[in-house]
Length: 148
Length: 135
Image 1 (cartoon, rainbow over the protein chains, first blue to last red):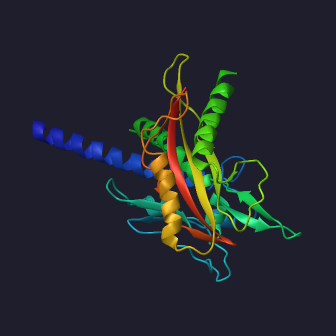
Image 2 (image 1 turned 180 degrees about the horizontal axis):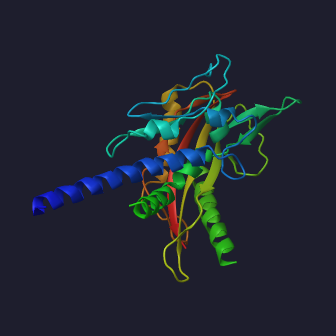
Image 3 (image 1 turned 90 degrees about the horizontal axis):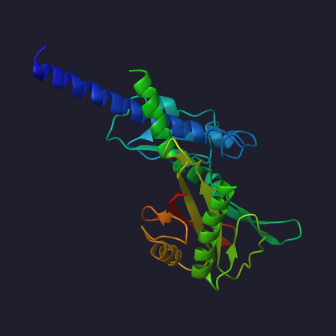
C-alpha cells in the first residue's frame, strides 16, 4: 500500500467515525427527549407528547394539530431512522409536533374553578436535553472508539 | 455538602441577577405561587441544569451546563414587535460572556428568543439563556 493510499484510508476512516459520532449523539438526544419523568425530563400522561417527536434532516419540524390519526394523536417517533443517513454538515431538527408542546415546555397561564388565574410553570424538558448535548457527544465518542 | 452549596449558589446568582433586571415587573419564580394580573406584564422563570460532568480523575471542579429561561408574559394587545422588543431587552441584559454572581457562572452564547405564542389573555415569548458553571 502506498503512502497516498494509507492517507486516503485514514481520511475515510476518520470521516466515517465522525459521521457515526454525529448520528449517535443526535440519536441519544432524541432518546433523552423521549424519556418520561422521572427517568428523563418529559412529562408523561398518555405518552402522546413523546410520540409526537419527529426528526428531519435539513428541514423543519412543523406542529401538526390533527396528529397522525386526524384527532391529535401520534403513532411514534422516528429519530433513529431519520438520522440514519445524516452526515457531518447536515442540520438535524428534532421537534414536537403536538400543538401543546410549547405550553408544556415553557408554561402557561391557566384559570381555576373560581376564575382565578395561575401561572403553570414550564417543564423545560427541551432545554434539559439540550444542556446534556456535550454528554451525548462524549458518550457517542466512547461508543464509536470502542466499536472500532 | 459541597455539591449542594454549588447548586444553591448557581440558582441564587441567577435569581439575584434576574430580580435586579426585572424590578419593578413581577416575576413568577419556580415552585412559588403566583397569581397573574391580566392587565399587567410579568416574567416567568424556568431553570434547568444537566447532570454535572467530571473534569479530572481526582477531586476537583465539575462542569455544569444549563439554561435559564425567562418568558415575557404580557397582555394581548400590543403588536408582536413590542413583545419581541421586551424579550430582546433580556437578551441584551444577559449577553454572552457575562459572569453572574460570585461563582464561576457565565453565559456561553447569545440568548435565543423563541416563537411567541398565545397564552389565554397573554402572549408568552420565551428567552432561553445558556449558561455554564465550573465548581
